[in-house]
Image 1 (tube, rainbow, N blue to C red):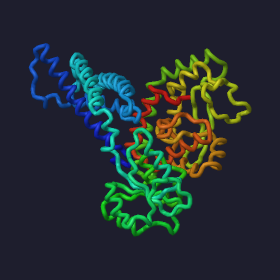
Image 2 (image 1 turned 30 degrees about the vertical axis):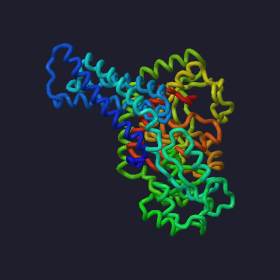
Image 3 (image 1 turned 45 degrees about the vertical axis):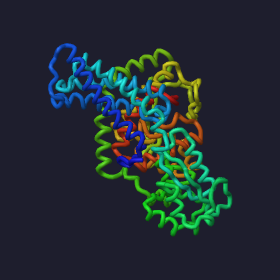
Image 4 (image 1 turned 90 degrees about the vertical axis):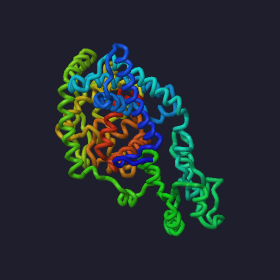
Length: 462
């Protein structure tokens, strides 16, 4: 994997993204040349239209990122990839129209744009057909050796068997575990030189998955392995990289303290984030005001009660604040103010409410909380005080998610469907801790783009 701005990108995805950029640039040039030939136009040197070609390629590529064209499901299924690509190219061309309006110098004639769009779709799908399963083959997977044969090693074994896994386990070494669950593991005593063993297996990484580390770290072995050029990782760091989450089953306080990250409070990144929040919230409120008004009328016509409702949530450093949302449930959804988890096909949701929840329209007024500084566009979902009290008692490190501002969208929201249980809250907490630990403007931008995918393909929206 390549680490870009503290976020891990699989090698296969990076390669495919670069190839896609080449395809898109070529499609734009082909569309230009073909159409010019049809109408008898002279074709000048390519350098004269580089800004237009680059704009076309980048706009469509960003749309592909936003629509999940590089997600595991799209990489594993040509059908899913085709659907995502068709929608992404269409949205990209619409975005091109907005760019042409703002910067006329970058305009591409509509006829040339249509040809470029067609060539782009054919080229992108053709590239995926040509590569087939190559992107998921062993050539792009890291070969790892696991030191350990207990429950933690079993966790890695299961992760390696999932579709889209970026690594393959080439060997397990039992390190005197009391509860050994990996039968194929070789006992450490049976290996004369562990560093040679790792090199012979052509491993690129060793993962330490010991059940008990106290007085059991094989320091000499790890030092020799490290000096051979093989990476050595602790299981918590490895799982963070592979899953995009902070694994609560393996993490400990010392790892959180000494590992890299948790820089969201730094002055420069904080100023950048706040500046973006202010500008974006003003623009969003202005642009969506007509939509909010139409929705408000629809809510009022369908059911009695206020159009907006205020609800207490827990924000930065555990401080409470009130969010404003468009009402999507009946007025009597909660008796005596008692907080209740939302359920799938919740009967309390109105017909209008079901639509605006799927399209996330009900959350638009939260931009006011962003403008006031109580929320950010990107961050952990703000929870009810009653839920927070319970979850802090049941889940370790739950309070740490409040070290960053809550957000309208976030890493957990785009990676995990809406949850209504303690286990769901645990899964989302792992994503929230990853975001708090690895925050960067790049990750915020990625989350904002991926939110478009969640809105258009509303998996888990409730």
